[in-house]
Every structure is written in structure tokens, then in C-alpha cells.
Amino acid sequence: MLADSRAHWADRDVLDIGIGGGRTTAVLAPDARRYVGIDFSISMIAAAKASLPGLDLRRADARRMPMFRDGAFDFVLFSFNGLDSVNDASRAVIMAEVTRVLKPGGAFVFSGHNLDWTGKGGFLADMFRVKISSSPLKTAKAIGRVGVRIRNWLRNQKAAVRTDRYAVMTDPGNDFASPHYYAGAAETRRQVEAAGLELVNVYDGEGKITADAAERASSTLYYLTRKPL
Ligand SMILES: C[S@@+](CC[C@H](N)C(=O)[O-])C[C@H]1O[C@@H](n2cnc3c(N)ncnc32)[C@H](O)[C@@H]1O
Image 1: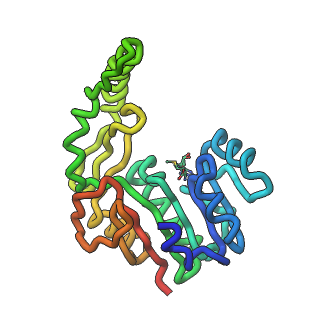
Image 2: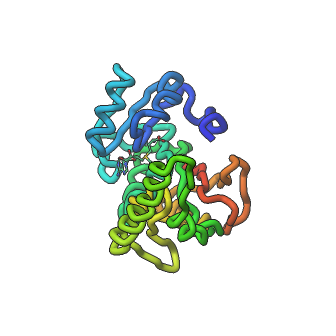
Image 3: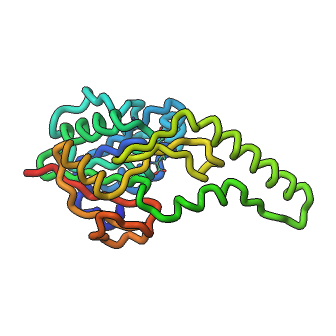
């Protein structure tokens, strides 16, 4: 996806939101004209700065980016479903902030958990899945993790939301430790357009353009959007 969108970021001014440890920084920064990476986690920014010294990496919250003027960037990225870690209201605020800092014609790329994915039905089975090993200790640990998953899932039920537009669910990633926002492609298009962006393409999990507004085969969808000229 980043390789496909190269024309949007190579030799351009790039804002990379939610850089975590700097995985996308290493790809984008060398070929961008200007690169700024932000993350609201102090420890993540510290780790990224330590492994990628000399770059413009800052601790900042995408909900409030007054340090960037209107139209400052050609390309904004929020990768690896990072946008799904905030709630519905914050998601709209972030999309509006991204629209503001983009130049007209600039692109915003992000990914999101797909509420229409049929595989969600397997979450319960994942909770109780145990890998039996020839080592009794490893098997005992694997059984112990079922308890961890159940505890995490129960703890996160107070964060669970289900509306006709989206859901906040705890999925098997990280042993059910983190609630994530899920929306389908049709709802995401609505959100993108409400923020003043155009949806250019939706890509499925294999990086193919999907025209299906209720794409069901991919757990994650990738969105290429654009600020109108
Ligand atoms: C799933 S990680 C992705 C890390 C990295 N982009 C990658 O692809 O490996 C999402 C990151 O987004 C950051 N994040 C979440 N909400 C944010 C916000 N409102 N502003 C800035 N960063 C945020 C988190 O701290 C986390 O490091």
C-alpha cells in the first residue's frame, strides 16, 4: 500500500501519525521532502527517536495539531489501524484535523478494522484456542493464557459499543487486551466525506482495490482518500 501510494509521498511533505516504534518512518522519511512523525505515547516516541536519530519525531496528539499550519502537508498517514484506538468522536476530530493540515489535492491514507468481516464470528473460538505442545510446561502456559484472555475480555466489556454505524470490540490481538473501533467501508466513506475528504479507493487485505461497499473477506481495509482541489 505504501509502495502503491509512493507518488503521493516521495519528494513531498509528509505527516506520519501514530508512528509507534518507527516502522513507517524508516520507509517514508528517506524519500520525503519533509517528514514529521508523531505519536501521543511518550515511550513510543522515545523508542523511535532512539532507533531513528536526527529525524523530526514529536510527541503529539492527532486530535489537536495547532503546531501545523493549514495545508502544511501533501500526504498524511495513520497506519496499522491506529485510528481505531480512539473513540467515535475523536475519530471525527482527527479526520477533520487531517483535512485541515492537508494541502488541496493531498492524500490521507489509513487502515481500519472491518465491521463487515465475516471472520469476527471466530473470536470466541480464538479465546479458547490452546496449542498443545510436547512440553507440558508450554501446554500449561497456553492453558493459562485462556484465563488471561477471558479476564481481558471481561474487563473490556465496559468499553464495548454496538451501534448501527460502528462497533467497539475486543479482538484476539494481544490476548483480547485492547478494544478496537470497527466500521465497514460504507460507514468509513461517510466519515471521510463528513470530514471534507474524497474516498479514492478501498483496498482489501491483499492490497487489491475492492469496489464492494460491504467487503466481507478482509479483517482490515485500507483507505486512500484525498482533499478535493
Ligand atoms: C497500532 S500502532 C501503529 C504503529 C506504527 N504506525 C506501525 O505501523 O507499526 C498505533 C499507534 O498510534 C498511536 N496513536 C493512537 N492514537 C493517537 C493519537 N490520537 N495521536 C497520536 N498517536 C496516536 C499509538 O500510540 C500507537 O503507537
